[in-house]
Length: 386
Image (tube, rainbow, N blue to C red; front, side, top):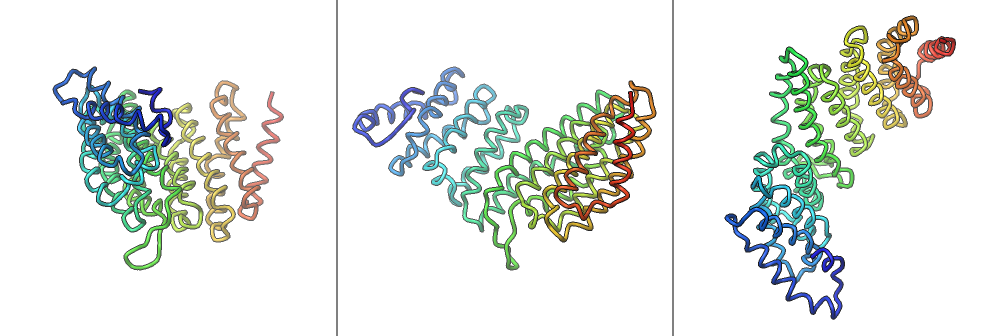
């Protein structure tokens, strides 16, 4: 099948193969739920292999049959991963995606797909769930602009709804194993949210009910913010969850663009800096230094993204000052400590200096002279260290 599906140009040879391909796909779609798992897996691999053949408009009926067969299998633990791969293969081809990415079709596809994502096996198989969710987002961004917001809300809402309870679990965890498990659960949920957000950079601005337009990333951030902001404090207890939170912020800044997200900049900076402050470098040094590095790197991305925006200069200047207030005393103290004690803070020092470099490069007017003086003094002191 894989060899036959490499190309489906409209040639005499390919037209001669069409009846055989159609028969193979019809047989694959007809494999019932009671068939052995190996046979169902083979049927799904056949559908994935022949996905290019489904792209032409005259094969719309065959496409619908294959999609329905795939959706039926997503919730089966024995073949869910194969079904996710087949769904992704179908959504990768423009002809298939354009026909599936319509209001009427997505209204039929989304309920069973979202239900499958919340159930086994996809609920615990992050890779397969990511494959299916990303494929769905390829269809969502093809919708008419007026329809994207509702589909985006349907996909993101279950993920956001799971985060408050996960944050409470992390906040209440009282031992290293529980903290690690709760942090990993939050990181996994935020990874699912990123899989939604990463497809929005190519989406057009969406019309709003009251007039005007908004980038879909702004809409997603608006829906997510009441959940993400309270998550910052408990996430500081886990390097995995805090990094996942920062990774989402970085993705949001890249996908949404500086100008559309400018109204969110104060809240973004406050949350990043709160995370930096929560990582007290005097305690749990290894974990704290990881968190501090992540916060400083995220702040550096914000400086790079928003630095050219004149309206952002006062906010970035204040944020740089607050970052220095947390970082400089700890780094100065580390330089006076033993080599073993200071070693975990080497990456923090590098991240802080990288932040200042980006500030000098992208918004030098936001870099307060006293901060630059203290940073240069810190560098000079570091160079004198043995």
